[in-house]
Image (tube, rainbow, N blue to C red; front, top):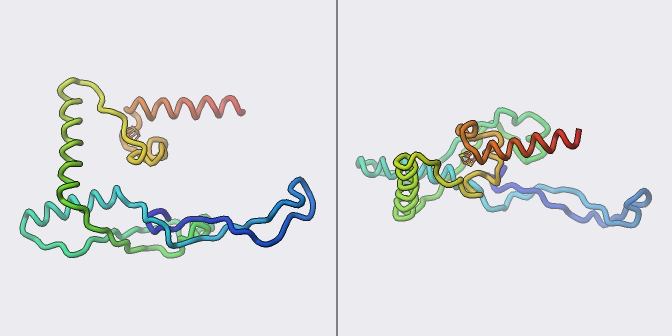
Length: 163
Ligand code: SF4
């Protein structure tokens, strides 16, 4: 949904609640919009890194695409998010080689320093960890990452308190 620039927007229906706790308050419905900023920086960095390697090896790269396979596209939850097709071909823009080189040099430097000093590298940025969603369900390193472990502990404590 995010990679396609789809987002939800509340739209005033022109009506108000006639009764209940919200009596007199305006009614809204949620509509999908398809003109949002496409959120695919991680994919763009990965594909552009491959592009640089291919170009270094003498191949010309004119276009880049991600083929996104949506296994749950038939489910209602996917449809509610505007995902109606099982496959999307999503174009990826070129990122400048200068930016990519600086990014990877920085990543390599903090990794080298971490290995040499036998300490963990700094916590990933808010963007890199998808506002913590990656740490809580998608990162392959989460078992060994103190930041993810503290988030999981917080979530478990909250669950216990609300039980
Ligand atoms: S679990 Fe740790 S390594 Fe993984 S994204 Fe979160 S902060 Fe980064």
